[in-house]
Image (cartoon, rainbow, N blue to C red; front, side, top):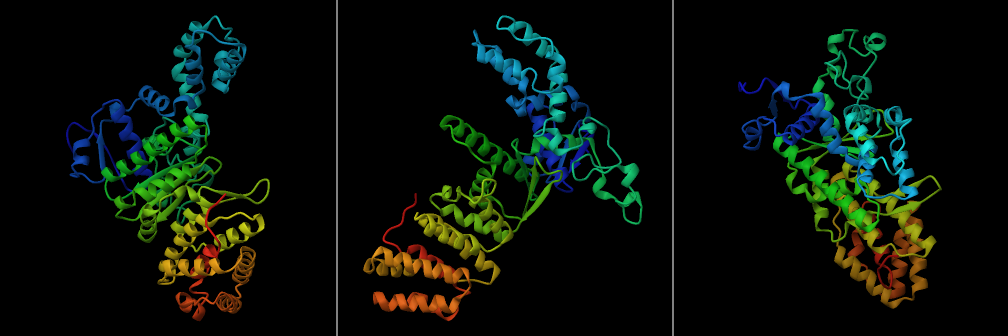
Length: 459
């Protein structure tokens, strides 16, 4: 080991990889030494070297405050207190922020902001800054509490891993969690103090994501940097326009536009705030190929739609598309749902349908060994028929075909197609393979239905 460094972390699994990313960003922020040159020159692929003495509680808390910014109530209050004057509503808001959690209530329980004592309040915040940051960071649900046992922040390595979903009460359940009651066999329980840096590797929103790219530390750092920069930009754009944005949208776009860089299988680690465990999604090369193919799509926002089912339940199209790509699950049900929905609502979802069918056909290719779609021919055929028949008749045929597909009555589908061909006097040569095996080639029928209209367009 280089004499300059006395400690190292190796990317043994996603926990160590995330700790490396978080710790590297911390060292970079304070311009502290590590083996950066070796990592960026790919002389060392999976090891971060550093000095243990450079990790201090004071620096850690300062970095946490920088990363989470105005997620800390005292930072919002500080920003408002630096104005020259305040109205009654602003004074009320500042006092609400100053008692926003347990530690702030303890400090400002009796000290109120009255519009004249801003300097005094700012001084109190500064004097108690470390305690405010530590207790807020430890207990806030999108900070340390989301990732690890709050009692173990800054603790020495434990008998069991401090992370949520890994931690067990060793005195009560240690033997039952081990193989043949041998504590040494509980490998995933291994703990290191550097796991405290894991929150800094995840995205800082309600759903925290970490991309574990196993090629090298350089790619690992770069890929997570791209994700965070994309989130930052999307958040800034949303604040300017007054619109909301979701982490899932940014993750989807990042997977689409960075697919060229993903030459190996990838793990997506997700930590939902309302789950007490980490979720691991394994992104296969086949799924990466599908994401990569979507790079050519002109408008990905077509997937950013939700359908209300009940007051408490919505079908989020993007979530379903991502889940289907990642797990190579067919989207038949969603396409049929949208087809039925547009009939019920009298609204065209043409572009959404075409996009879903495109993804679904790619999934079919990998699940069943390949479905060859003559897209242009099918679209032209549907247009020729649509030009000859009035819209109410077209709507009736779309309904019949959709209902038959939903009930998996593929003989009926073929009968309706032949009836339509005879009625419009248009040949269905492009659908011959479908007529022979409708179930295998149902994406052809989906596309035909989607295009069987006078014109495209959505609401």
